[in-house]
Image (cartoon, rainbow, N blue to C red; front, side, top):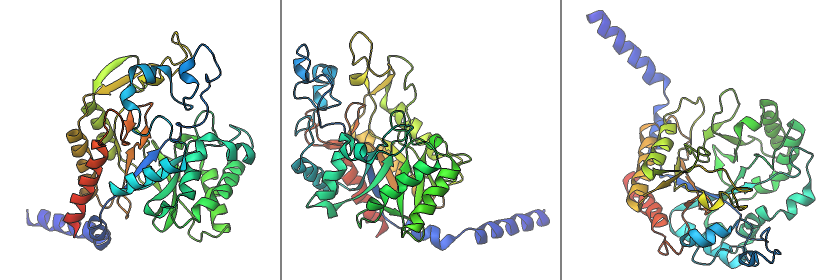
Length: 373
C-alpha cells in the first residue's frame, strides 16, 4: 500500500514538473479577447435587381431574398439591409468596441476558384468591400481584424503554388498594426481545413518568413485538423442537421453541440466558439419552387439573452479550467457579427433594436475582467 502511494505521488510530481505551471497560471489570469466573424453579403446589386417581375430586388443588396423580406423582417439591421457605406462600417466598429468585441474576422475569397490567382477579380469582389472600408475607417484603431479564408465551393485555393501566392497577397494585411496576433504572429483562420495540405501550409509559413515575418504565421484550421500541421484548431460553427430537412429544434441543443467540440482531442490549442443562432430558412428555396436556394435543414428557436450569456460564460469557464488547451491570448470567437441569412448575428435589428445579445457580450467581458484584476 505504501509503495503504491509513493508511486502515485512520484507520478504526480512528474506531471507537475512537465507542465508549464507559471505559463498556465499567467494565461488563466488574462482577460478574454472576443472576436466575431463578419460576413460581407449586404451590399452590391441583387441578382434579381433587373427583373421587372421581382420589384422587391431593385434596391436590395446581394444576399437578401424575398423570403427574408416577407417572413423575416425582424432581421433587418436598424440601419437597413444595406451596410455598404463608410458611415455604417464606422458605426459597426464603435458598436463592437463599445460592447466587448475586440476584432472582426473578415471572410476572404479566392479568385478564380480552383484556378490561378486573379488579382483584378479579387480586388473587385463585393465580398471584400467591408474589410476595405474597415481599413479606411477613421476609428479603425478601436478594434483589430483578421482573415477567415473562405476556401469553400466557389472560392477554392488548389495547390501549394496558389497558397504561396495568396499568402504573398495577404502580407499587406499581416503587416497592418491592427492585425490580430496569436503567439506574437499574425493569425489567419482557414475555413475548410480539409481543403489545404501540409505542403501548402508549409508554403504559407515559408513565404511569410521570406517577406519579413521572422516567426511566420499562426494558422488556425476550422473543424477536424487531424493530420494537418495547423498551429491552432477552432470552428466557424457547428450545426447538427445542416441539410437534413425542415425540422425545428431548440437553441440549447445547438449550444450543446458547440460545447461538445470544446472537449475535443485535438493536439493543437483550441479557440472555443460560441454560436449566436442558426436558422437559414431565409436562404432556403430562394430560387422559388424549391430550386436555386440552400437545402432545407434544421433550424433552432427559443434563444434568449440569458441562454446566450450562460453560453459565453461557459466558454470562459472552459478556458479557465483548461489554460493549457487554448491560446495564451485567451481568444473566444462568436458566430457571427452579421450572418443575417443564417440566423447568427449580434448587430442591432428591428427585432432586437437595443442589441440585447451584443450587450450580453459586454456584460460577460466586463465581469471576467473584474475577476482577473
